[in-house]
Every structure is written in C-alpha cells, then in structure tokens.
Length: 161
Image (cartoon, rainbow, N blue to C red; front, top):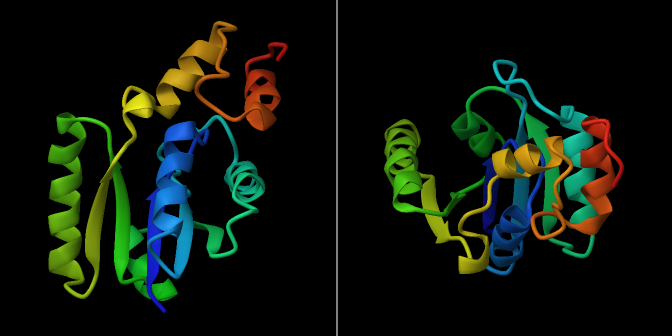
C-alpha cells in the first residue's frame, strides 16, 4: 500500500488545496492530509477546526485521512509510513522554496520522495492568505472556498456570510 502525505496549515482550506487532495487521492492507496500545528504562527482556525473542516470536505474520498501533527513533517511522514510527500506549486516562487525543503527532507530521509503537483490554472493565484484578506473586509470568497465553510470563515471576522 503506497501512502502519501499532503502537509500544510490549511488555514483555511481552499479550492486549490482540495484540487491537490482529489488528484493525490487518485494516485495513492492512502493519502494523509497532515494539518500542521504551528505554534509560531497565529492561525485563524484552531487545529481541531481545520481538521474537522477538511474531514467534512473529503468524506467522499475513502482513502483520505486527516490528522494533525506537530514537529518536523518528515518525522511524521515516517511515523505514518508515507513514502511520498505531496506539495502543490502555484508559481515559480513556490518551486524555489519547495525544492529546498524537498532536498533537505531527502537528505534526512532518502526513502521518502517528494512529488510536486502544479495547481490547476484556475487556482494558481489562490492562497489561504488571500481568502483571509478578502474575508476580513467582507469580500465575496465563494470563488475561493467551498460554500460549507464560508460562514465559519466570516464568523471569525465578525461578518455575516
């Protein structure tokens, strides 16, 4: 059974993230969406809220699991038996950073490969930061995130969905 991990903060999860999850789930027997607990970063949603959102949005994918982790992703990947790390790329600037991380992970754990998936063109501009920016000003985020989570996001900013 080939297991892959798709790590990230997913704060909040976007259509771009869901695109990568769907495509990765079709490539591997088991996909673990690893939601990073990053204490150095001020998150909009708690770790439990992010895990819950992703679980509800991926419930139709029987081979997708969602779990949180703390610490080095490569250590968590080994812990869950992943042989592949999935990373989404939107632009060339993503590639430079992601390549450096992938090479470092490869030195640490040569048995684990990194697979880069380019984001679908219609989501190439999209990030969680953009979603939060739009939401903070009461903007329409329906083109960025599933309708099910729009009220949750808007509530965090004290706005109506």
